[in-house]
Length: 165
Image 1 (cartoon, helix red, strand yellow):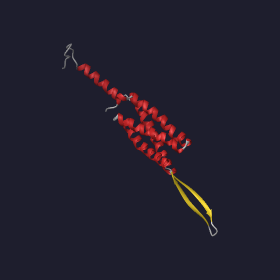
Image 2 (tube, helix red, strand yellow):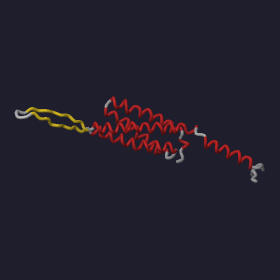
Image 3 (cartoon, one colour):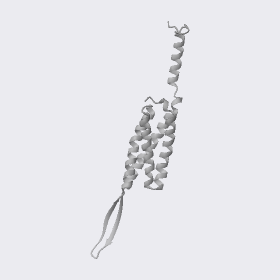
Image 4 (cartoon, helix red, strand yellow):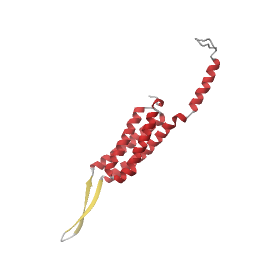
């Protein structure tokens, strides 16, 4: 039997009740709903980053066919124009994919809060750089990333105390 050092009461009954309460708290997943929602939003945003990367790299080489006429023959020459800003947008999109997955996993596992925020920052960079593709791809791909990233950042920062380190 254990006794309290201050008052002298028996501690057996108190320990049994606290173990039941601790197991119920361990089973209670309501306090992790914000982090689960944040992780899900980050994973969905990484899918949009994949689309940004593929579309931007595909658009970085523009093919235009020009024709000219000569007295002897009619020929087509192929011209390719390289757009470096679209290639950089594609690279940012693929980095957003990689860091977004890392961020989503760290939010789900509730570890490495700083790495989760770095991944969200790279997602924001990919979303903003999608504006170089034009207004249409920015609205379709970049704006949802910005909205979901902002919501998941708020949810993650609210639940800072639930991260282990």
